[in-house]
Length: 318
Length: 318
Image 1 (cartoon, each protein chain N blue to C red):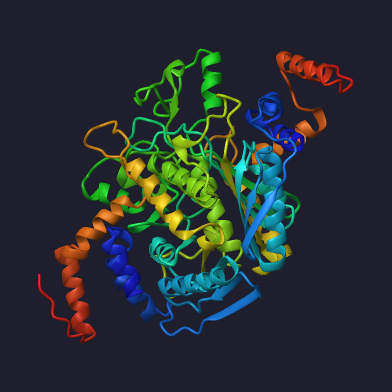
Image 2 (image 1 turned 135 degrees about the vertical axis):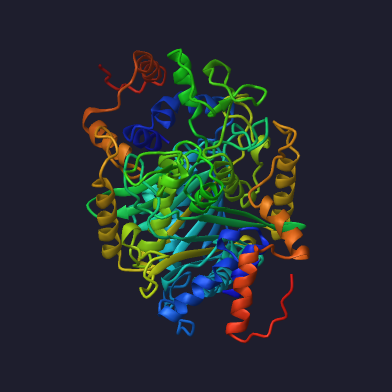
């Protein structure tokens, strides 16, 4: 869990990074999260596994699933793992990036509690279910697409509220499902590309709820409500062995050629360069890996409190 | 090919349906398409295959790949096929639906010639690469998401031109990459959800170009230019065996519960109901399966000409 949060913050995804540790620790105390799980794995066929996470940290369960997927793909060419009885797993990229480090194509999905309105609806049904896909690239970190299926995240709505700013049009709705630009009134989000993002979110729900037998959409327990309730979340992790398709070195060289070609495309506006998915995170990682993860004064104090409370004896200074 | 085009037209995807037959027949004549292929399959591992399509119809090659994927998934739980040396395969749904009919999760992807502008760029690079995902549902046809990664298709632009209408804002650009609502001036399309659709299109390119060794993005030959040039297209077809994860009947019943729950969600506007991906195509299929596929007078004449030219002796009447 610590590794997942830290690597996520290093990549700049602060919403899913180290600041969430307090939430998870509270979840252990309340009985939602089981810090000493007994995993069990059901395997009916050589390239499919269902991992029962025994209500432990989603980060740990997801990484266990990634290892299973990598193992199966190493022997049979591909591996697919549905995870059940899990909890919030943080950023999907953490698992798919691990798979790409093994010269495999990685995919990682999770469902989450209801937040997105289906097209033409007025109530949220599906969560902001992310789609994540990775592939190794020669000479740099893996290509990594990790996208939520809403247009903006709820964290972005919170930041707009803090700054007293308006939201863009048609990204969120009020409690009656009517689109509004008033960030204070936004309680639900609209899917990216209307019915396309809604369809992708539903695809993720099929992979994470239906294959694992976990609840779906509005039947999923809320992350930030009643911490005594178990989450019963499902994830899906997949790995495909590149060497089963083609020469790995050639694949990685061609990946590097393609992403470099894209980065060198002429820009529409001189101050905005063409990037590929995961580039902003790569740039952030290089900086933060040297300079550290920036935290607010409040966050620093919260970590100091943890340090004292659990007598960790970490030397802390600003 | 005929089966692919007909089922696609029955589902209402007219842009990829029977009207394209003339294009494919011209492709045979010009030497682009090989109507008598010798397929070859390379298998390095039990759940991965690379199918060399020998430049035949993409429809035929894709269905051959789907059969291979289904076979592997039947024995090992999953099957993944990269197709190389192929041509335009029509609508991605045709293959993924076949997989879902075998009680499996189906995925199907193809790349295509350059049409979409990468975020912040001013030239098209990737094609309007579709993402397709299917899963069986009890009591009805499979759930089917089949989405292009642009906001609107180029066919939609052509229809706007014919009707002298303006395009919505920020769906297409002129030849300099500047967004325009003038349908006559639109030569390139913008990705759905900006960098998210662009990222999805790149994901599809990785699956279809990198795993198969085929050219990518701007290096792909144009569908409607120089019909003597071979296409060298790649596709990716995947199957996952649901029975390897869970009881198939339970999976399909829960799918039916979820889609019905969504269809019964309260509507924002009374004239627009909540649907799930593939519902418009299901409705169209039920109608056209009884009433036939509507064709314009011009299309009817074109089919009459084919009937005569190849002495098919089909009795044709309006």
